[in-house]
Amino acid sequence: MIQDRETLTLLLEAIDRFVRERLIPAEAQVTETDAIPADIVDEMREMGLFGYALPKEYGGLGLTAEEQVEVSFAFCYASPVFRSYVGTNNGIGGMGIVIDGTPAQKARWLPRLASGEIIGSFALTEPDNGSDAAGLKTFARRDGDHYVINGTKRYITNAPEATIFTLMARTDPGQHGAAGVSAFIVERATPGLSTTAPDRKMGQRGSHTSDVILEDVRVPAGNLIGGREGQGFKTAMKVLDRARLNIAAVCVGIAQRMLDDTLAYALSRKQFGQPIAEFQLVQAMLADSKAEIYAARSMTLDAARRADTGANIITEASCAKLFASEMCSRVADRCVQIYGGAGYMQDYAIERLFRDVRLFRIFEGTSQIQQLVIARNMIRGATR
Ligand code: COS
Image (cartoon, rainbow, N blue to C red; front, side, top):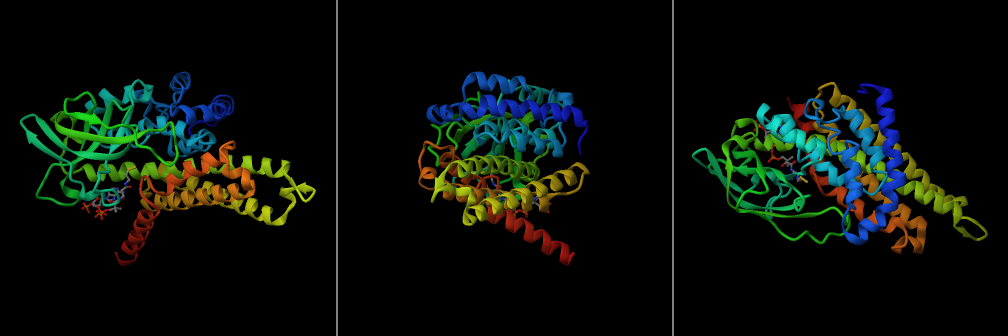
Protein backbone atom coordinates (compact mmCIF):
# COMPACT_ATOMS: atom_id res chain seq x y z
CA MET A 1 0.00 0.00 0.00
CA ILE A 2 1.29 3.44 -0.92
CA GLN A 3 -0.02 6.09 1.47
CA ASP A 4 0.99 9.10 -0.59
CA ARG A 5 2.70 8.54 -3.93
CA GLU A 6 4.14 12.04 -4.13
CA THR A 7 5.81 11.90 -0.70
CA LEU A 8 7.19 8.44 -1.44
CA THR A 9 8.59 9.58 -4.78
CA LEU A 10 10.37 12.49 -3.07
CA LEU A 11 11.83 10.13 -0.46
CA LEU A 12 12.98 7.63 -3.08
CA GLU A 13 14.57 10.39 -5.17
CA ALA A 14 16.41 11.68 -2.08
CA ILE A 15 17.66 8.15 -1.28
CA ASP A 16 18.70 7.64 -4.89
CA ARG A 17 20.76 10.85 -4.84
CA PHE A 18 22.27 9.93 -1.46
CA VAL A 19 23.21 6.47 -2.78
CA ARG A 20 24.90 7.79 -5.92
CA GLU A 21 26.54 10.91 -4.50
CA ARG A 22 27.50 9.79 -0.99
CA LEU A 23 27.25 6.04 -0.40
CA ILE A 24 28.71 4.42 -3.52
CA PRO A 25 31.74 6.77 -3.51
CA ALA A 26 32.35 5.88 0.18
CA GLU A 27 32.18 2.09 -0.26
CA ALA A 28 35.90 1.50 -0.73
CA GLN A 29 36.72 3.56 2.36
CA VAL A 30 34.13 1.66 4.42
CA THR A 31 35.78 -1.61 3.41
CA GLU A 32 39.27 -0.35 4.09
CA THR A 33 38.49 1.13 7.50
CA ASP A 34 35.80 -1.40 8.47
CA ALA A 35 33.62 1.57 9.53
CA ILE A 36 30.96 3.86 8.10
CA PRO A 37 32.19 7.48 8.28
CA ALA A 38 30.49 9.48 11.04
CA ASP A 39 29.22 12.16 8.62
CA ILE A 40 27.38 9.51 6.60
CA VAL A 41 25.80 8.11 9.78
CA ASP A 42 24.67 11.66 10.61
CA GLU A 43 23.16 12.09 7.15
CA MET A 44 21.30 8.78 7.47
CA ARG A 45 19.93 10.06 10.78
CA GLU A 46 18.82 13.35 9.25
CA MET A 47 17.06 11.54 6.40
CA GLY A 48 15.03 9.49 8.89
CA LEU A 49 16.61 6.23 7.74
CA PHE A 50 16.95 4.85 11.27
CA GLY A 51 13.18 4.81 11.68
CA TYR A 52 11.52 4.52 8.28
CA ALA A 53 9.70 1.35 9.33
CA LEU A 54 8.81 2.55 12.83
CA PRO A 55 5.40 4.12 13.58
CA LYS A 56 4.91 7.86 13.05
CA GLU A 57 3.53 8.34 16.57
CA TYR A 58 6.98 7.33 17.90
CA GLY A 59 8.94 9.51 15.52
CA GLY A 60 9.41 7.06 12.66
CA LEU A 61 8.40 7.62 9.04
CA GLY A 62 5.60 5.05 9.45
CA LEU A 63 6.09 3.48 6.02
CA THR A 64 3.88 0.59 4.94
CA ALA A 65 5.45 -2.75 4.01
CA GLU A 66 5.22 -1.87 0.31
CA GLU A 67 6.86 1.49 0.90
CA GLN A 68 9.58 -0.15 3.01
CA VAL A 69 10.55 -2.56 0.26
CA GLU A 70 10.64 0.32 -2.24
CA VAL A 71 13.06 2.09 0.12
CA SER A 72 15.21 -1.04 0.34
CA PHE A 73 15.28 -1.45 -3.45
CA ALA A 74 16.68 2.10 -3.69
CA PHE A 75 18.88 2.18 -0.57
CA CYS A 76 20.49 -1.21 -1.26
CA TYR A 77 21.71 -0.12 -4.66
CA ALA A 78 24.69 0.84 -2.47
CA SER A 79 26.69 -1.68 -0.46
CA PRO A 80 24.36 -3.58 1.92
CA VAL A 81 26.61 -2.50 4.79
CA PHE A 82 24.87 0.89 5.00
CA ARG A 83 21.43 -0.67 5.34
CA SER A 84 22.77 -3.10 7.90
CA TYR A 85 23.67 -0.22 10.21
CA VAL A 86 20.13 1.23 10.24
CA GLY A 87 18.43 -2.09 9.51
CA THR A 88 18.33 -3.43 13.04
CA ASN A 89 16.46 -0.35 14.36
CA ASN A 90 13.86 -0.61 11.58
CA GLY A 91 13.77 -4.38 11.64
CA ILE A 92 14.92 -7.09 13.98
CA GLY A 93 16.11 -4.77 16.77
CA GLY A 94 13.05 -2.52 16.93
CA MET A 95 10.20 -4.54 15.45
CA GLY A 96 9.70 -6.84 18.47
CA ILE A 97 8.84 -3.77 20.56
CA VAL A 98 6.52 -2.44 17.81
CA ILE A 99 4.68 -5.76 17.41
CA ASP A 100 4.46 -7.05 20.97
CA GLY A 101 5.78 -4.31 23.30
CA THR A 102 3.64 -2.70 26.00
CA PRO A 103 2.67 0.97 25.53
CA ALA A 104 5.29 1.92 28.15
CA GLN A 105 8.02 -0.05 26.35
CA LYS A 106 7.09 1.54 23.03
CA ALA A 107 7.07 5.05 24.50
CA ARG A 108 10.41 4.53 26.19
CA TRP A 109 12.43 2.98 23.38
CA LEU A 110 10.89 3.58 19.95
CA PRO A 111 11.47 7.36 19.71
CA ARG A 112 15.18 6.91 20.43
CA LEU A 113 15.46 4.06 17.92
CA ALA A 114 13.55 6.04 15.28
CA SER A 115 15.76 9.10 15.63
CA GLY A 116 18.93 7.01 15.50
CA GLU A 117 19.98 8.25 18.94
CA ILE A 118 20.48 4.60 19.90
CA ILE A 119 21.07 1.34 18.03
CA GLY A 120 18.89 -1.69 18.70
CA SER A 121 20.02 -5.25 18.08
CA PHE A 122 18.36 -8.70 17.99
CA ALA A 123 19.89 -11.49 20.04
CA LEU A 124 18.42 -14.90 19.21
CA THR A 125 21.26 -17.08 17.84
CA GLU A 126 23.53 -18.92 20.27
CA PRO A 127 26.68 -21.04 19.89
CA ASP A 128 24.58 -24.25 19.90
CA ASN A 129 21.30 -22.90 18.49
CA GLY A 130 21.03 -21.23 15.09
CA SER A 131 18.36 -22.80 12.88
CA ASP A 132 16.92 -24.58 15.92
CA ALA A 133 16.05 -21.29 17.54
CA ALA A 134 13.42 -22.77 19.88
CA GLY A 135 16.13 -24.82 21.61
CA LEU A 136 18.00 -21.79 22.90
CA LYS A 137 19.71 -22.17 26.27
CA THR A 138 20.19 -18.62 27.57
CA PHE A 139 18.29 -18.66 30.84
CA ALA A 140 16.35 -15.90 32.60
CA ARG A 141 15.50 -16.68 36.22
CA ARG A 142 12.90 -14.57 37.98
CA ASP A 143 14.23 -12.91 41.13
CA GLY A 144 11.73 -10.53 42.73
CA ASP A 145 11.01 -7.71 40.31
CA HIS A 146 13.97 -8.64 38.12
CA TYR A 147 15.14 -11.47 35.86
CA VAL A 148 18.71 -12.71 36.12
CA ILE A 149 19.99 -13.69 32.67
CA ASN A 150 22.92 -15.97 31.87
CA GLY A 151 24.08 -17.20 28.46
CA THR A 152 25.90 -16.40 25.24
CA LYS A 153 24.50 -15.01 21.99
CA ARG A 154 26.46 -15.40 18.74
CA TYR A 155 26.90 -13.52 15.42
CA ILE A 156 24.72 -10.66 16.65
CA THR A 157 24.49 -7.88 14.06
CA ASN A 158 25.37 -4.43 15.41
CA ALA A 159 26.12 -5.88 18.88
CA PRO A 160 29.32 -3.81 19.16
CA GLU A 161 27.29 -0.61 18.59
CA ALA A 162 24.01 -1.52 20.29
CA THR A 163 22.48 0.32 23.23
CA ILE A 164 19.64 -2.18 23.63
CA PHE A 165 19.08 -5.79 22.67
CA THR A 166 15.81 -7.55 21.95
CA LEU A 167 17.00 -10.74 23.55
CA MET A 168 15.35 -14.14 23.70
CA ALA A 169 15.91 -16.26 26.82
CA ARG A 170 14.30 -19.30 28.40
CA THR A 171 12.18 -18.41 31.39
CA ASP A 172 10.72 -21.88 31.90
CA PRO A 173 13.45 -24.53 32.29
CA GLY A 174 10.74 -27.21 32.26
CA GLN A 175 9.76 -26.27 28.70
CA HIS A 176 12.48 -27.25 26.25
CA GLY A 177 10.83 -25.83 23.12
CA ALA A 178 9.34 -22.56 21.97
CA ALA A 179 6.81 -22.26 24.80
CA GLY A 180 9.52 -21.69 27.42
CA VAL A 181 11.08 -18.71 25.63
CA SER A 182 10.51 -15.04 26.53
CA ALA A 183 11.74 -11.82 24.92
CA PHE A 184 13.42 -9.03 26.86
CA ILE A 185 14.73 -5.56 26.23
CA VAL A 186 18.23 -5.68 27.69
CA GLU A 187 20.26 -2.52 28.04
CA ARG A 188 23.89 -2.77 27.08
CA ALA A 189 24.93 -0.77 30.14
CA THR A 190 23.63 -3.45 32.53
CA PRO A 191 26.42 -4.92 34.68
CA GLY A 192 27.41 -8.43 33.55
CA LEU A 193 26.71 -7.78 29.85
CA SER A 194 29.69 -7.67 27.53
CA THR A 195 30.39 -8.04 23.82
CA THR A 196 33.45 -9.68 22.29
CA ALA A 197 35.71 -8.24 19.59
CA PRO A 198 33.90 -8.00 16.23
CA ASP A 199 33.88 -11.25 14.20
CA ARG A 200 36.20 -11.49 11.18
CA LYS A 201 33.74 -12.17 8.36
CA MET A 202 33.90 -13.22 4.68
CA GLY A 203 32.39 -9.90 3.60
CA GLN A 204 30.29 -6.94 4.73
CA ARG A 205 33.23 -5.10 6.24
CA GLY A 206 31.87 -2.03 8.01
CA SER A 207 28.97 -4.02 9.43
CA HIS A 208 29.85 -5.64 12.72
CA THR A 209 28.75 -8.78 14.51
CA SER A 210 29.97 -10.23 17.78
CA ASP A 211 29.05 -12.44 20.70
CA VAL A 212 26.98 -11.01 23.53
CA ILE A 213 27.88 -12.52 26.89
CA LEU A 214 25.47 -12.35 29.80
CA GLU A 215 26.73 -13.13 33.30
CA ASP A 216 24.12 -12.62 36.03
CA VAL A 217 22.62 -9.69 34.12
CA ARG A 218 19.75 -8.25 36.17
CA VAL A 219 16.93 -7.03 33.94
CA PRO A 220 13.85 -5.29 35.39
CA ALA A 221 10.66 -7.37 34.97
CA GLY A 222 9.22 -4.34 33.20
CA ASN A 223 11.55 -5.11 30.28
CA LEU A 224 9.83 -8.42 29.51
CA ILE A 225 8.38 -7.66 26.06
CA GLY A 226 4.59 -7.56 26.27
CA GLY A 227 4.76 -8.32 29.99
CA ARG A 228 4.05 -12.03 29.43
CA GLU A 229 6.39 -14.98 29.72
CA GLY A 230 6.44 -17.70 27.07
CA GLN A 231 5.68 -15.41 24.13
CA GLY A 232 9.27 -14.66 23.11
CA PHE A 233 9.67 -17.28 20.38
CA LYS A 234 6.51 -16.09 18.67
CA THR A 235 7.69 -12.50 18.93
CA ALA A 236 10.99 -13.52 17.32
CA MET A 237 9.22 -15.38 14.51
CA LYS A 238 6.87 -12.47 13.78
CA VAL A 239 9.87 -10.15 13.64
CA LEU A 240 11.66 -12.55 11.29
CA ASP A 241 8.67 -12.72 8.91
CA ARG A 242 8.99 -8.99 8.30
CA ALA A 243 12.76 -9.16 8.27
CA ARG A 244 12.76 -11.89 5.63
CA LEU A 245 10.59 -9.78 3.37
CA ASN A 246 13.03 -6.94 3.77
CA ILE A 247 16.06 -9.08 3.02
CA ALA A 248 14.34 -10.06 -0.23
CA ALA A 249 14.14 -6.35 -1.08
CA VAL A 250 17.78 -5.83 -0.11
CA CYS A 251 18.73 -8.64 -2.52
CA VAL A 252 16.77 -7.03 -5.36
CA GLY A 253 18.47 -3.64 -4.80
CA ILE A 254 22.02 -4.93 -4.72
CA ALA A 255 21.46 -7.43 -7.56
CA GLN A 256 20.29 -4.55 -9.76
CA ARG A 257 23.45 -2.61 -8.88
CA MET A 258 25.70 -5.58 -9.71
CA LEU A 259 23.92 -6.10 -13.03
CA ASP A 260 24.10 -2.40 -13.99
CA ASP A 261 27.83 -2.28 -13.20
CA THR A 262 28.34 -5.45 -15.20
CA LEU A 263 26.37 -4.25 -18.22
CA ALA A 264 28.49 -1.08 -18.28
CA TYR A 265 31.64 -3.21 -18.09
CA ALA A 266 30.41 -5.57 -20.82
CA LEU A 267 29.75 -2.60 -23.10
CA SER A 268 33.21 -1.12 -22.57
CA ARG A 269 35.33 -4.28 -22.50
CA LYS A 270 36.37 -5.39 -25.98
CA GLN A 271 37.50 -8.85 -27.06
CA PHE A 272 37.80 -10.25 -30.57
CA GLY A 273 37.30 -6.70 -31.82
CA GLN A 274 33.95 -5.96 -30.21
CA PRO A 275 32.35 -5.23 -26.82
CA ILE A 276 31.82 -8.50 -24.92
CA ALA A 277 28.13 -7.49 -24.54
CA GLU A 278 27.76 -8.38 -28.22
CA PHE A 279 28.49 -12.04 -27.55
CA GLN A 280 25.39 -14.16 -27.12
CA LEU A 281 26.85 -16.27 -24.31
CA VAL A 282 27.41 -13.06 -22.32
CA GLN A 283 23.95 -11.82 -23.30
CA ALA A 284 22.43 -15.02 -21.90
CA MET A 285 23.96 -14.29 -18.50
CA LEU A 286 22.78 -10.67 -18.62
CA ALA A 287 19.27 -11.66 -19.69
CA ASP A 288 18.86 -14.42 -17.10
CA SER A 289 19.94 -11.98 -14.41
CA LYS A 290 17.51 -9.31 -15.60
CA ALA A 291 14.61 -11.78 -15.65
CA GLU A 292 15.40 -13.17 -12.21
CA ILE A 293 15.72 -9.71 -10.64
CA TYR A 294 12.36 -8.80 -12.13
CA ALA A 295 10.82 -11.99 -10.71
CA ALA A 296 12.26 -11.35 -7.24
CA ARG A 297 11.12 -7.73 -7.33
CA SER A 298 7.59 -8.76 -8.28
CA MET A 299 7.42 -11.42 -5.57
CA THR A 300 8.69 -9.03 -2.93
CA LEU A 301 6.19 -6.33 -3.88
CA ASP A 302 3.35 -8.84 -3.92
CA ALA A 303 4.25 -10.19 -0.47
CA ALA A 304 4.55 -6.64 0.88
CA ARG A 305 1.14 -5.66 -0.52
CA ARG A 306 -0.39 -8.74 1.08
CA ALA A 307 1.25 -7.82 4.39
CA ASP A 308 -0.32 -4.37 4.15
CA THR A 309 -3.80 -5.94 3.97
CA GLY A 310 -3.09 -7.62 7.31
CA ALA A 311 -2.81 -11.06 5.69
CA ASN A 312 -0.59 -13.77 7.15
CA ILE A 313 2.51 -13.73 4.92
CA ILE A 314 4.68 -16.35 6.61
CA THR A 315 4.82 -18.46 3.42
CA GLU A 316 5.19 -15.51 1.06
CA ALA A 317 7.96 -13.90 3.12
CA SER A 318 9.89 -17.17 3.11
CA CYS A 319 9.29 -17.64 -0.64
CA ALA A 320 10.53 -14.12 -1.36
CA LYS A 321 13.58 -14.46 0.89
CA LEU A 322 14.46 -17.88 -0.52
CA PHE A 323 14.11 -16.87 -4.16
CA ALA A 324 15.64 -13.40 -3.89
CA SER A 325 18.69 -14.45 -1.87
CA GLU A 326 19.45 -17.40 -4.14
CA MET A 327 18.87 -15.16 -7.16
CA CYS A 328 21.27 -12.57 -5.74
CA SER A 329 24.06 -15.13 -5.42
CA ARG A 330 23.44 -16.39 -8.97
CA VAL A 331 23.53 -12.83 -10.32
CA ALA A 332 26.73 -12.09 -8.37
CA ASP A 333 28.33 -15.22 -9.77
CA ARG A 334 27.38 -14.39 -13.37
CA CYS A 335 28.59 -10.82 -12.95
CA VAL A 336 32.01 -12.01 -11.75
CA GLN A 337 32.05 -14.36 -14.74
CA ILE A 338 31.34 -11.53 -17.19
CA TYR A 339 34.05 -9.37 -15.61
CA GLY A 340 36.40 -12.32 -16.08
CA GLY A 341 39.85 -11.86 -14.53
CA ALA A 342 38.91 -8.32 -13.48
CA GLY A 343 36.01 -9.73 -11.44
CA TYR A 344 38.47 -11.60 -9.26
CA MET A 345 40.42 -8.43 -8.47
CA GLN A 346 39.73 -6.10 -5.58
CA ASP A 347 39.93 -3.09 -7.92
CA TYR A 348 36.31 -3.69 -8.92
CA ALA A 349 33.30 -3.49 -6.59
CA ILE A 350 31.95 -6.77 -7.92
CA GLU A 351 34.62 -8.78 -6.07
CA ARG A 352 33.48 -7.27 -2.76
CA LEU A 353 29.75 -7.44 -3.52
CA PHE A 354 30.09 -11.11 -4.51
CA ARG A 355 31.34 -11.84 -0.98
CA ASP A 356 28.86 -9.46 0.70
CA VAL A 357 25.75 -11.06 -0.78
CA ARG A 358 26.71 -14.61 0.20
CA LEU A 359 25.34 -13.83 3.66
CA PHE A 360 21.77 -13.41 2.42
CA ARG A 361 21.29 -17.15 1.90
CA ILE A 362 22.31 -17.77 5.50
CA PHE A 363 21.11 -15.13 7.95
CA GLU A 364 17.55 -14.46 9.11
CA GLY A 365 16.90 -18.13 8.30
CA THR A 366 18.94 -20.17 5.82
CA SER A 367 17.50 -21.10 2.43
CA GLN A 368 16.89 -24.57 3.89
CA ILE A 369 14.88 -23.09 6.79
CA GLN A 370 12.78 -21.09 4.28
CA GLN A 371 12.11 -24.32 2.34
CA LEU A 372 11.10 -26.02 5.56
CA VAL A 373 8.73 -23.18 6.53
CA ILE A 374 7.14 -23.12 3.06
CA ALA A 375 6.68 -26.89 2.84
CA ARG A 376 5.33 -27.16 6.40
CA ASN A 377 2.71 -24.54 5.65
CA MET A 378 1.78 -26.31 2.40
CA ILE A 379 1.32 -29.61 4.23
CA ARG A 380 -0.66 -27.95 7.04
CA GLY A 381 -2.90 -26.28 4.46
CA ALA A 382 -3.52 -29.55 2.64
CA THR A 383 -4.27 -31.65 5.72
CA ARG A 384 -6.25 -29.10 7.73
N1 COS B 1 4.55 -16.17 13.50
C1 COS B 1 3.86 -16.41 14.64
N2 COS B 1 4.00 -17.56 15.35
C2 COS B 1 4.83 -18.49 14.87
C3 COS B 1 5.56 -18.31 13.68
C4 COS B 1 5.40 -17.09 12.98
N3 COS B 1 6.04 -16.85 11.85
N4 COS B 1 6.32 -19.40 13.45
C5 COS B 1 6.07 -20.24 14.45
N5 COS B 1 5.17 -19.69 15.32
C6 COS B 1 4.59 -20.29 16.52
C7 COS B 1 3.94 -21.62 16.19
O1 COS B 1 2.60 -21.42 15.77
C8 COS B 1 4.04 -22.37 17.48
O2 COS B 1 3.02 -21.91 18.37
P1 COS B 1 2.04 -22.94 19.15
O3 COS B 1 2.99 -23.80 19.94
O4 COS B 1 1.19 -22.04 20.00
O5 COS B 1 1.33 -23.68 18.10
C9 COS B 1 5.37 -21.90 18.05
O6 COS B 1 5.66 -20.65 17.43
C10 COS B 1 6.50 -22.88 17.77
O7 COS B 1 6.60 -23.03 16.38
P2 COS B 1 7.19 -24.31 15.68
O8 COS B 1 6.65 -25.54 16.34
O9 COS B 1 6.99 -24.16 14.23
O10 COS B 1 8.75 -24.19 16.05
P3 COS B 1 10.00 -25.04 15.59
O11 COS B 1 10.90 -25.21 16.73
O12 COS B 1 9.55 -26.25 14.85
O13 COS B 1 10.83 -24.06 14.61
C11 COS B 1 11.55 -22.88 12.70
C12 COS B 1 10.41 -23.41 13.57
C13 COS B 1 12.60 -23.90 12.33
C14 COS B 1 10.85 -22.40 11.45
C15 COS B 1 12.21 -21.69 13.45
O14 COS B 1 12.95 -22.15 14.54
C16 COS B 1 13.10 -20.85 12.58
O15 COS B 1 12.62 -19.98 11.83
N6 COS B 1 14.43 -21.05 12.68
C17 COS B 1 15.39 -20.20 12.02
C18 COS B 1 15.78 -19.12 12.95
C19 COS B 1 16.41 -17.99 12.25
O16 COS B 1 15.88 -17.45 11.29
N7 COS B 1 17.57 -17.59 12.75
C20 COS B 1 18.25 -16.48 12.23
C21 COS B 1 18.63 -15.64 13.39
S1 COS B 1 18.22 -14.00 13.23
S2 COS B 1 19.62 -13.24 12.09
